[in-house]
Image (cartoon, rainbow, N blue to C red; front, side, top):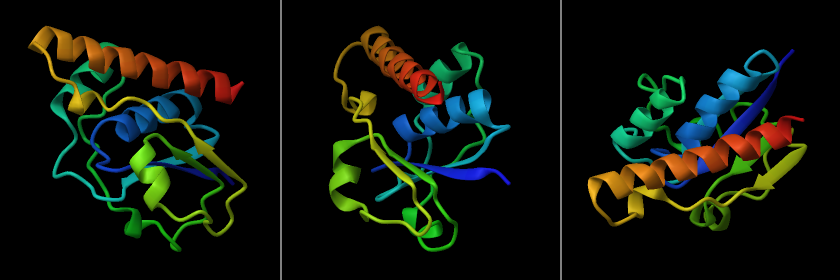
Length: 138
């Protein structure tokens, strides 16, 4: 039986969605992967979809979900928190959890710059997330 991974962020629109996409691609045969937010946004950020597509991962069908959808409903073996705000506001303990990881990444949605600079920031954060996941899966 596969273990569950929950990737948690505040808005569940950028970083956690990218991490979910990477985990499904790299380890979907080993884990069931979910992502959620403590205050989910209406949609996945279009630039997150674009830069993940550039990396060969389609997250266009993913949607932001509320943490309450999973809390106490699925056993979370690995909780990965990818932003500081979610780390402060999320529960410290989940039923069945064996590992709570805190990997804070910059929020590319808060970046201010030209369209080209903003896309570059999304790519930078995407690459950091992908590298961190590759290291953890080793």
